[in-house]
Image 1 (cartoon, rainbow, N blue to C red):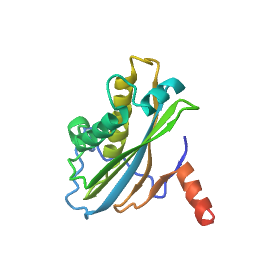
Image 2 (cartoon, helix red, strand yellow):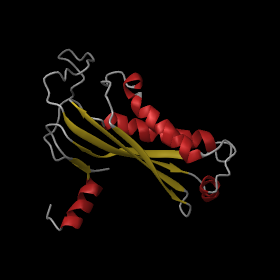
Image 3 (cartoon, rainbow, N blue to C red):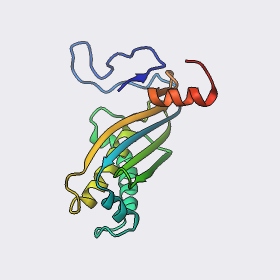
Image 4 (cartoon, rainbow, N blue to C red):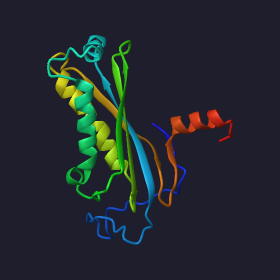
Length: 180
């Protein structure tokens, strides 16, 4: 899948000169408002979507549990991803779009922080864990559910500014009438 990178091609920052893993030193970077939006898609059967919408899944309120799990996961990202910095998140939100016709649930996560480093991993972790929670709560009805894609949709903040997935970039261009 293509994307438009509105910044220069970055280098791998989590490796030192000899190729060993390292945590990036962000102490010299300016703090700025940073935000990331990620998405995950869960593919299931239309009848499973109906069960979720009607709150008939035996384990309970699927979307409420998935929302809480996603928020908690964002807060624990640095415990899960070895080289991530712990961040004082100021906002985490999880939203769902259920499409019973296609049997898809689209999960959107948004993470925001005032920090010296970005929140992409927190947003991706939140969307992933929310999707996994839905899978866990519905697997007795449909063990053939499929997760994916899980992807970053956009990020803002820091010295590199805005990054949008190509499809989102095209939508923004169409909304504003700007030429690429």
